[in-house]
Image 1 (tube, helix red, strand yellow):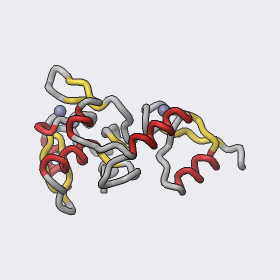
Image 2: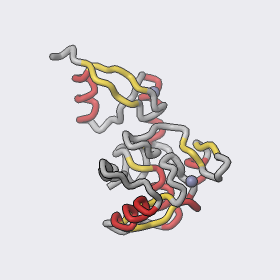
Image 3: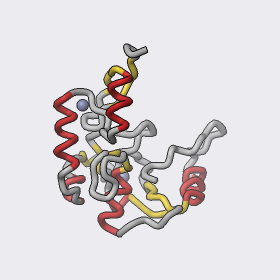
Image 4: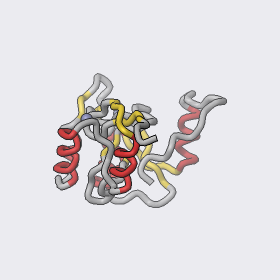
Length: 159
Ligand SMILES: [Zn+2]
Ligand SMILES: [Zn+2]
């Protein structure tokens, strides 16, 4: 049982790695984000002390033809840009689009979610983000044809 291995996604580089389950479980108990290597673990620690600014977040993106700023770092299982280091959320993984939205426009009220006009989950371009209720977001997706019978709500990014 102690040799059991699990697949993790590195919170720093986004690579998939196979790790010993007991190591990962104890690290998670301490609040450490998953990392593939010591190097990435060290970088995550220095990142957690870094001031997260709009400029800094945008510097980690690549601009697409459609004007999206696509996140170059780790994604959550639903494909949203995520970070595990920010002043407000600490090491708790949170959607980068939510962090950048809050840095610019202030905290999003409870029950609201930061949605994409571009439907690109990797995008954190503040101009492509709007604040909607969960119901509005679902209606928007339905209208854009992303609604399927087998659709299940995306695990909510952030909180
Ligand atoms: Zn890594
Ligand atoms: Zn976009």
